[in-house]
Amino acid sequence: MNNVATHNPKLFYGWWLIAAVFVGEMFAIGSTTYAFGLFVKPLELEFGISRGDANKGLALFIIGMGLSAPLIGRLIDRRSARRVMLFGAAWMGAGFIALALAPTLQWMALAILFMVAAGATMIGPLTANTLASRWFDRRRGRALGLVAVGTSVGGTLLVPLIAYNIEAFGWRQALMIQGGIILVIVGALALWVVRDRPQDLGLLPDGELANRADAASHLPTGPVWTAGALLRHRDFWCIGLSVGLTFAVTQSVLASLVPYAADAGIDAQRGALLISVLSVCSILGKLLFGALAERVDKRWLLLAVVCFTVAQLCTLIVQPDFALLLVICGIAGFAIGGELPVWAAIIAERFGPRSFGTVMGMMNPINMTCSLVAISYVGIAYDQSGGYTLPFQVFLGVAAASAVMTLLITAPRKAT
Image 1 (cartoon, rainbow, N blue to C red):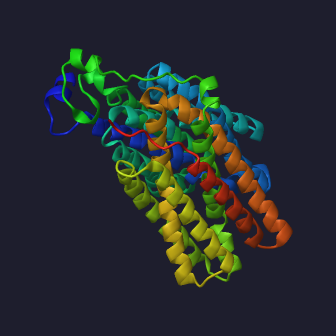
Image 2: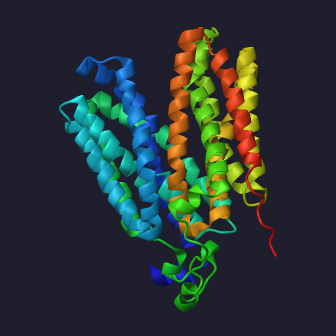
Image 3: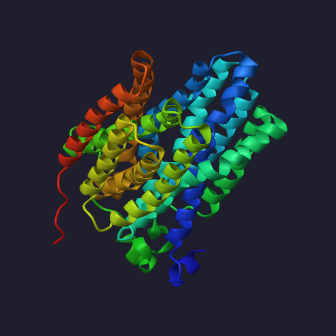
């Protein structure tokens, strides 16, 4: 493998790595966030719980990812990302099997919080973005954009598969099957394809050829960021809050879009079309914003995401006809999709790839906190006000705060 990687310039090995972590991210998010709704009714029927209690499983998953990310990010930087991903495939697969065998809701909650969520963090966006930032420099934006598409593809491909398995074999058996698939496929890719750095194969980022001695001399340099240093750094908080606040708004609006449409007299089929258009445009947004991140100041790209989000909120508040709503949802899809690759790219630019996992891992709790607060608030505000106008108006203020945080990020250093 090493000789092929060193002497065949036609296809840089980094693109094979991107394909491997793409699949990991696809299973991490597609099997959980996207597929969670498939298990709500089976849980209600088997355990006799309310819809709200069933939905707490998703909140536990978000909390588990947020709390485990700082430790896992540090492990990826200090140990082997390949081994972290390999262990994560086994741990997440075991978590799904534990869910399938759990006799009570309490045991299921523990399996989600400590096994499934931690395993998804090890094979998902945190590891994928860290490895992409190491293997690519000039083409980093495109690589990060491609990796980010994995989450959307996971929802497209895995949800129908899991739904079929639930109908054919039952929800517990479907969980066991999914756990086995994750263990075999993601584990095999981590073992046979993933490598920690291009220098391990005598390469440089972006596919520059070098012998092993030369490659070793080009190992990533720069500061190793500690938790204390990051917490004292202005850009850490500005980037984290900019992304976290915008992400919280977009996710809350996405969760509210179908009931909002129903309240506006839009039938279920056209409501589903809104989600489909938003999802397709989010894929295009990931690719477009990823490519632009190589050429455009990433602060302005983050600001563009905020502006698209504001446009969607204003449109929803005035309650337009369906045609305009469809167009705005498509525009908002670009914002939702573009945020992740730009976030990863600006972390690599400001803090360097050497501590990428640590930085992104420590920003994850900010995302988690903002998202949980926003998703809880939109439901409470709707119940109290009888509509979505009030929460969407509040979210306009949150988006404005995100824009301020974005503008406070320091300008990138000029190349000399």
